Length: 289
Ligand SMILES: [Zn+2]
Image (cartoon, rainbow, N blue to C red; front, side):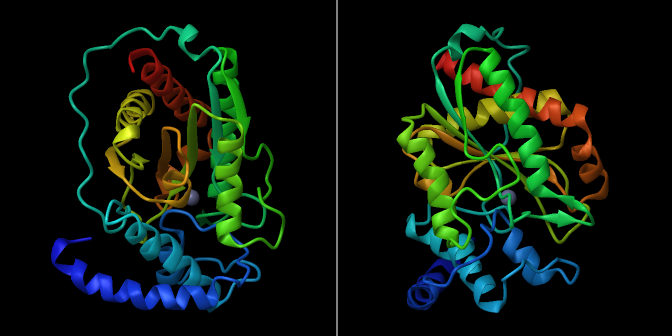
Protein backbone atom coordinates (compact mmCIF):
# COMPACT_ATOMS: atom_id res chain seq x y z
CA UNK A 1 0.00 0.00 0.00
CA UNK A 2 1.42 3.35 -0.98
CA UNK A 3 1.28 6.29 1.46
CA UNK A 4 -0.76 8.68 -0.60
CA UNK A 5 -3.58 6.19 -0.81
CA UNK A 6 -3.96 5.74 2.90
CA UNK A 7 -6.48 8.52 3.52
CA UNK A 8 -8.68 7.19 0.77
CA UNK A 9 -8.15 3.76 2.28
CA UNK A 10 -9.47 4.93 5.65
CA UNK A 11 -12.79 5.96 4.18
CA UNK A 12 -13.01 2.67 2.39
CA UNK A 13 -12.31 0.80 5.56
CA UNK A 14 -15.06 2.55 7.46
CA UNK A 15 -17.47 1.53 4.74
CA UNK A 16 -16.09 -1.97 4.61
CA UNK A 17 -16.32 -2.36 8.37
CA UNK A 18 -20.06 -1.77 8.05
CA UNK A 19 -20.29 -4.26 5.22
CA UNK A 20 -18.35 -6.80 7.19
CA UNK A 21 -20.63 -6.45 10.19
CA UNK A 22 -23.51 -7.32 7.93
CA UNK A 23 -21.84 -10.27 6.27
CA UNK A 24 -19.77 -11.59 9.17
CA UNK A 25 -22.36 -14.18 10.30
CA UNK A 26 -22.24 -15.87 6.91
CA UNK A 27 -20.39 -19.13 7.04
CA UNK A 28 -17.48 -19.26 4.70
CA UNK A 29 -16.29 -22.62 3.57
CA UNK A 30 -12.65 -21.80 3.36
CA UNK A 31 -9.98 -19.99 5.25
CA UNK A 32 -8.50 -18.00 2.46
CA UNK A 33 -4.83 -17.36 2.73
CA UNK A 34 -2.33 -14.96 1.36
CA UNK A 35 -3.33 -13.88 -2.09
CA UNK A 36 -5.86 -16.63 -2.56
CA UNK A 37 -8.90 -14.43 -2.65
CA UNK A 38 -7.41 -11.86 -4.96
CA UNK A 39 -6.31 -14.68 -7.21
CA UNK A 40 -9.76 -16.19 -7.14
CA UNK A 41 -11.23 -12.85 -8.12
CA UNK A 42 -8.77 -12.10 -10.87
CA UNK A 43 -7.93 -15.46 -12.35
CA UNK A 44 -10.42 -16.97 -14.76
CA UNK A 45 -8.95 -20.40 -14.13
CA UNK A 46 -9.21 -20.28 -10.36
CA UNK A 47 -11.55 -22.95 -9.02
CA UNK A 48 -14.57 -21.89 -7.03
CA UNK A 49 -14.75 -23.28 -3.54
CA UNK A 50 -17.72 -25.37 -2.53
CA UNK A 51 -20.42 -23.36 -0.82
CA UNK A 52 -18.68 -20.23 -2.01
CA UNK A 53 -20.24 -17.40 -3.90
CA UNK A 54 -19.74 -13.75 -4.27
CA UNK A 55 -20.62 -12.88 -0.67
CA UNK A 56 -18.08 -15.33 0.69
CA UNK A 57 -15.50 -14.03 -1.71
CA UNK A 58 -16.29 -10.49 -0.70
CA UNK A 59 -16.11 -11.33 2.96
CA UNK A 60 -12.82 -13.13 2.54
CA UNK A 61 -11.44 -10.27 0.51
CA UNK A 62 -12.42 -7.73 3.13
CA UNK A 63 -11.17 -9.87 5.95
CA UNK A 64 -7.79 -10.90 4.61
CA UNK A 65 -6.81 -8.06 2.36
CA UNK A 66 -8.29 -4.91 3.81
CA UNK A 67 -9.75 -5.04 7.26
CA UNK A 68 -7.08 -7.19 8.86
CA UNK A 69 -4.16 -4.99 7.89
CA UNK A 70 -5.97 -1.74 8.65
CA UNK A 71 -7.17 -2.85 12.07
CA UNK A 72 -3.55 -3.24 12.95
CA UNK A 73 -2.93 0.46 12.24
CA UNK A 74 -1.20 0.15 8.93
CA UNK A 75 1.28 -2.29 10.35
CA UNK A 76 0.68 -4.77 7.61
CA UNK A 77 1.09 -5.37 3.98
CA UNK A 78 0.54 -8.15 1.56
CA UNK A 79 2.51 -10.00 -1.02
CA UNK A 80 0.54 -8.29 -3.75
CA UNK A 81 0.60 -4.70 -2.54
CA UNK A 82 3.09 -4.27 0.24
CA UNK A 83 6.17 -2.25 0.80
CA UNK A 84 9.33 -3.65 -0.73
CA UNK A 85 10.53 -6.77 1.05
CA UNK A 86 13.34 -6.35 3.52
CA UNK A 87 16.44 -7.83 1.99
CA UNK A 88 18.46 -10.16 4.12
CA UNK A 89 21.87 -9.08 5.35
CA UNK A 90 24.77 -10.93 3.74
CA UNK A 91 25.32 -14.40 5.10
CA UNK A 92 27.61 -14.49 8.09
CA UNK A 93 29.62 -17.19 6.38
CA UNK A 94 28.17 -20.39 7.71
CA UNK A 95 27.03 -19.05 11.05
CA UNK A 96 26.96 -20.97 14.30
CA UNK A 97 26.48 -24.71 14.16
CA UNK A 98 23.01 -25.56 15.38
CA UNK A 99 23.00 -27.25 18.76
CA UNK A 100 19.88 -29.36 18.84
CA UNK A 101 19.83 -28.92 22.61
CA UNK A 102 18.36 -25.46 22.20
CA UNK A 103 15.06 -26.93 21.04
CA UNK A 104 14.68 -29.30 23.97
CA UNK A 105 11.52 -28.54 25.90
CA UNK A 106 10.34 -25.82 23.52
CA UNK A 107 6.67 -25.97 22.58
CA UNK A 108 6.28 -25.23 18.89
CA UNK A 109 2.96 -25.11 17.06
CA UNK A 110 3.23 -26.02 13.39
CA UNK A 111 0.29 -24.83 11.30
CA UNK A 112 -0.04 -26.26 7.79
CA UNK A 113 -2.26 -23.65 6.11
CA UNK A 114 -5.71 -24.52 4.73
CA UNK A 115 -6.89 -28.15 4.48
CA UNK A 116 -10.19 -29.99 4.41
CA UNK A 117 -12.66 -28.23 2.17
CA UNK A 118 -10.17 -25.42 1.57
CA UNK A 119 -7.24 -26.39 -0.65
CA UNK A 120 -5.80 -22.87 -0.63
CA UNK A 121 -4.11 -21.87 -3.88
CA UNK A 122 -4.29 -24.44 -6.66
CA UNK A 123 -2.75 -25.03 -10.06
CA UNK A 124 -4.24 -27.89 -12.04
CA UNK A 125 -4.34 -30.79 -9.62
CA UNK A 126 -1.65 -29.29 -7.41
CA UNK A 127 -2.98 -27.96 -4.13
CA UNK A 128 -1.40 -25.61 -1.64
CA UNK A 129 -2.90 -27.51 1.30
CA UNK A 130 -0.99 -30.66 0.28
CA UNK A 131 2.35 -28.84 0.08
CA UNK A 132 1.73 -27.18 3.41
CA UNK A 133 0.82 -30.44 5.13
CA UNK A 134 3.73 -32.40 3.68
CA UNK A 135 6.25 -29.75 4.74
CA UNK A 136 4.53 -29.30 8.10
CA UNK A 137 4.80 -33.00 8.90
CA UNK A 138 8.48 -33.09 7.95
CA UNK A 139 9.10 -30.01 10.08
CA UNK A 140 7.27 -31.69 12.97
CA UNK A 141 9.52 -34.75 12.73
CA UNK A 142 12.72 -32.71 12.63
CA UNK A 143 11.68 -30.58 15.60
CA UNK A 144 10.66 -33.63 17.64
CA UNK A 145 13.95 -35.33 16.87
CA UNK A 146 15.68 -32.27 18.28
CA UNK A 147 13.69 -32.53 21.50
CA UNK A 148 10.95 -29.97 20.91
CA UNK A 149 7.33 -30.57 21.84
CA UNK A 150 5.39 -30.08 18.62
CA UNK A 151 1.67 -29.47 18.38
CA UNK A 152 0.16 -29.61 14.90
CA UNK A 153 -2.93 -27.55 14.14
CA UNK A 154 -3.74 -30.33 11.69
CA UNK A 155 -1.83 -33.46 10.69
CA UNK A 156 -4.29 -34.68 8.07
CA UNK A 157 -6.19 -33.06 5.22
CA UNK A 158 -8.94 -31.45 7.30
CA UNK A 159 -10.33 -28.21 8.62
CA UNK A 160 -9.22 -27.25 12.12
CA UNK A 161 -12.53 -25.69 13.24
CA UNK A 162 -15.77 -27.71 12.96
CA UNK A 163 -17.20 -27.93 9.43
CA UNK A 164 -19.41 -24.95 8.68
CA UNK A 165 -17.35 -22.56 10.77
CA UNK A 166 -16.64 -19.07 9.55
CA UNK A 167 -13.29 -18.00 8.23
CA UNK A 168 -12.64 -16.22 11.50
CA UNK A 169 -13.48 -19.32 13.51
CA UNK A 170 -11.23 -21.48 11.36
CA UNK A 171 -8.28 -19.16 11.87
CA UNK A 172 -9.08 -18.60 15.56
CA UNK A 173 -9.06 -22.37 16.09
CA UNK A 174 -5.44 -22.36 14.95
CA UNK A 175 -4.58 -19.45 17.22
CA UNK A 176 -6.36 -21.18 20.14
CA UNK A 177 -4.15 -24.25 19.78
CA UNK A 178 -1.06 -22.10 20.15
CA UNK A 179 -2.43 -20.10 23.07
CA UNK A 180 -3.84 -23.07 25.00
CA UNK A 181 -0.54 -24.92 24.70
CA UNK A 182 1.40 -21.84 25.83
CA UNK A 183 3.56 -22.31 22.77
CA UNK A 184 6.99 -20.74 22.53
CA UNK A 185 6.52 -20.30 18.80
CA UNK A 186 3.87 -20.47 16.08
CA UNK A 187 4.92 -21.41 12.55
CA UNK A 188 2.39 -21.30 9.73
CA UNK A 189 3.36 -22.97 6.45
CA UNK A 190 1.86 -21.76 3.17
CA UNK A 191 2.32 -21.79 -0.58
CA UNK A 192 2.04 -18.54 -2.50
CA UNK A 193 0.19 -17.71 -5.71
CA UNK A 194 0.18 -14.77 -8.06
CA UNK A 195 -1.69 -13.93 -11.27
CA UNK A 196 1.73 -13.40 -12.84
CA UNK A 197 3.05 -16.94 -13.48
CA UNK A 198 6.66 -15.80 -13.79
CA UNK A 199 6.93 -14.77 -10.14
CA UNK A 200 8.92 -17.22 -8.02
CA UNK A 201 10.57 -17.31 -4.64
CA UNK A 202 10.15 -17.90 -0.93
CA UNK A 203 9.30 -15.29 1.66
CA UNK A 204 8.59 -15.10 5.37
CA UNK A 205 6.00 -12.86 7.00
CA UNK A 206 6.06 -11.77 10.64
CA UNK A 207 3.69 -9.67 12.74
CA UNK A 208 5.98 -7.19 14.48
CA UNK A 209 9.42 -6.59 15.83
CA UNK A 210 9.00 -9.42 18.30
CA UNK A 211 9.27 -11.88 15.44
CA UNK A 212 11.56 -10.09 13.00
CA UNK A 213 14.65 -11.97 14.13
CA UNK A 214 12.81 -15.27 13.84
CA UNK A 215 11.66 -14.38 10.34
CA UNK A 216 15.18 -13.40 9.28
CA UNK A 217 16.71 -16.60 10.63
CA UNK A 218 14.09 -18.80 8.98
CA UNK A 219 14.16 -16.96 5.67
CA UNK A 220 17.94 -17.03 5.57
CA UNK A 221 18.15 -20.75 6.33
CA UNK A 222 15.29 -21.51 3.94
CA UNK A 223 17.04 -19.80 1.05
CA UNK A 224 20.37 -21.45 1.84
CA UNK A 225 18.73 -24.86 2.02
CA UNK A 226 16.49 -24.65 -1.04
CA UNK A 227 18.27 -22.22 -3.35
CA UNK A 228 14.90 -20.55 -3.92
CA UNK A 229 14.73 -16.93 -5.05
CA UNK A 230 14.91 -14.76 -1.93
CA UNK A 231 11.85 -12.55 -1.66
CA UNK A 232 12.85 -11.49 1.82
CA UNK A 233 10.91 -10.94 5.00
CA UNK A 234 8.02 -8.58 5.50
CA UNK A 235 5.62 -7.55 8.26
CA UNK A 236 2.04 -8.66 7.78
CA UNK A 237 -1.11 -8.70 9.83
CA UNK A 238 -2.62 -11.97 8.80
CA UNK A 239 -5.04 -13.28 11.39
CA UNK A 240 -2.84 -16.03 12.80
CA UNK A 241 0.08 -13.63 13.12
CA UNK A 242 -1.65 -10.73 14.78
CA UNK A 243 -3.63 -12.88 17.20
CA UNK A 244 -0.86 -15.11 18.52
CA UNK A 245 1.03 -13.75 21.51
CA UNK A 246 4.24 -15.74 21.02
CA UNK A 247 6.81 -15.17 18.26
CA UNK A 248 5.10 -16.18 15.05
CA UNK A 249 5.86 -16.40 11.34
CA UNK A 250 4.09 -17.37 8.16
CA UNK A 251 6.35 -18.99 5.59
CA UNK A 252 5.37 -18.83 1.92
CA UNK A 253 7.62 -21.56 0.52
CA UNK A 254 7.10 -20.78 -3.16
CA UNK A 255 4.61 -19.93 -5.91
CA UNK A 256 2.24 -22.63 -7.08
CA UNK A 257 1.32 -20.27 -9.92
CA UNK A 258 4.77 -20.80 -11.44
CA UNK A 259 4.91 -24.14 -13.22
CA UNK A 260 8.52 -24.94 -12.41
CA UNK A 261 8.26 -23.96 -8.77
CA UNK A 262 4.96 -25.80 -8.42
CA UNK A 263 6.63 -28.91 -9.82
CA UNK A 264 9.53 -28.60 -7.37
CA UNK A 265 7.17 -28.29 -4.43
CA UNK A 266 5.54 -31.59 -5.39
CA UNK A 267 8.84 -33.38 -4.86
CA UNK A 268 9.57 -35.07 -1.57
CA UNK A 269 13.22 -34.05 -1.55
CA UNK A 270 12.36 -30.40 -2.10
CA UNK A 271 9.69 -30.47 0.60
CA UNK A 272 12.34 -31.92 2.88
CA UNK A 273 14.69 -29.05 2.06
CA UNK A 274 11.99 -26.52 2.84
CA UNK A 275 11.30 -28.21 6.18
CA UNK A 276 15.03 -28.41 6.91
CA UNK A 277 15.44 -24.70 6.19
CA UNK A 278 12.60 -23.72 8.51
CA UNK A 279 13.91 -26.12 11.15
CA UNK A 280 17.42 -24.70 10.98
CA UNK A 281 16.14 -21.14 11.20
CA UNK A 282 14.05 -21.97 14.25
CA UNK A 283 17.04 -23.56 15.92
CA UNK A 284 19.24 -20.55 15.23
CA UNK A 285 16.58 -18.26 16.61
CA UNK A 286 16.47 -20.09 19.93
CA UNK A 287 20.22 -20.47 19.98
CA UNK A 288 21.01 -16.81 19.63
CA UNK A 289 18.01 -15.00 21.06
ZN1 LIG B 1 -2.15 -20.06 2.08
